[in-house]
Image 1: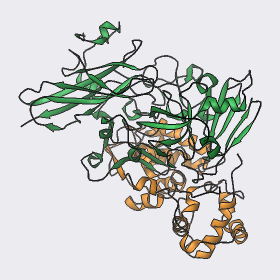
Image 2 (image 1 turned 30 degrees about the horizontal axis):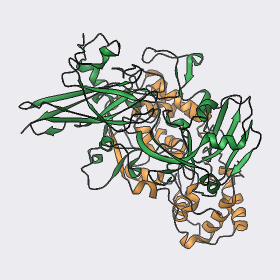
Image 3 (image 1 turned 30 degrees about the vertical axis):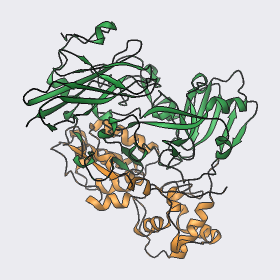
Image 4 (image 1 turned 135 degrees about the horizontal axis):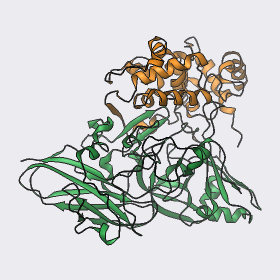
Length: 395
Length: 213
């Protein structure tokens, strides 16, 4: 049994898995996947780099080393594209129609004239960590880098919807961007969010990221920001908000971005009727420092990383240096919030030398703890298993 | 305000291909035996050409190389892509699936992720000056498009055998557009004889096509 000394798990009434952390369990989340970053993507390189998972269309991951801070620089912020961007067009209009009293067609300038708000939030691809799910599933084989935290500036979606005057029977806001599928047979990327989420004050139509206008890769001129919800809802190159009774139809709503309603055996087929549309990303933490296999000098060993949840603010992060026998509470930095990350850090006694390891796990307010093993699902979404890093202490 | 500037994206397949040959052989893979059912298809030497012509029209090679899937998973993926417009004859689908399963199967070796300079990433899709491809005639371009391009890209340029050309960053990267046209790409044959003026005309025509909102 895992002993939960000084652990928030016991305080929160969380049941720990009744197994010791075995080397095999850890391998399944680290080295055995066959995916590694090229070593030159580390921060000690002279130039900033992204990890390249695809150039056509662009799919780039943020190197792990950049997750040591509250705000991820835009220059190394991950890029996820289904079809690739449309042409850059600042004259692109935003149409709001459907179940509204006053359909609107707004220019970017008109949107910019509305009261502006800033939201600090994590953008995370639903498939972040897909390569860590076993058995493997098709899709971009992200490890950790399809996430980042930025300051997003724009207007509240509820202000736009108020201008259009939503009809009482409305229940969903369907979302479309300007990116066109490569072939007529390819389904368009259409998503929707429930009206209640659209009216939440944190949901914004953004035109700035980290103090600068959105870049094309990140959705210029307008993109949706839905803090706490997976990136597939953060529609880029946003051109159309259609208020409807029903959620959007089509592949990307009715087939993709769905998870089993309950836990399934890894690799098991899941009937479509038992799948649900995914929404918020689950609680997760990730160790950034040290890095796997690093050699570090003797003395106190600093362990640092990020923790966040799309469902609640982070309550605590714990780190174990003995593979889960004992846990120690880390210090948290940054403002807690739903869909907002904080930096955790803890100094571990270093000893004379030899191999060391650290495992991190996060707890969100309300008691839900990051699971030791992420729930496998047929599309490889929402990997959030405990992260373990091993390094060598040597003079 | 009119369109200020625009950007391109699907441009780099040529660059990817030049790195390791069309679809590189299993240089990074361990030993994999194709399943008995697909062994005949796997023996076909048409796999690399079919993958280049069909998959690489829309994807860069990296997306294939990073997968580690079973033959059944590859078969499902290839069938899905054929339904989405990938140009593979029904008879050739098993060859494509078998080739991918043989090279990027569950026991293929380690995949090393490449990198791109942070400054190069936006530059790949950034609009560029038209240079020698400026001031084309949309009318002449429309006629040229109908004669040379429409049979593959569709009369409306929304894609058919070739990919969609409407509202694409590549239209505002004239030199890349010209290179793609002259060198060929995926199933598109190289058209090295295309003049600068013809490129300018084609761009003038394609830029006036706007998607319905």
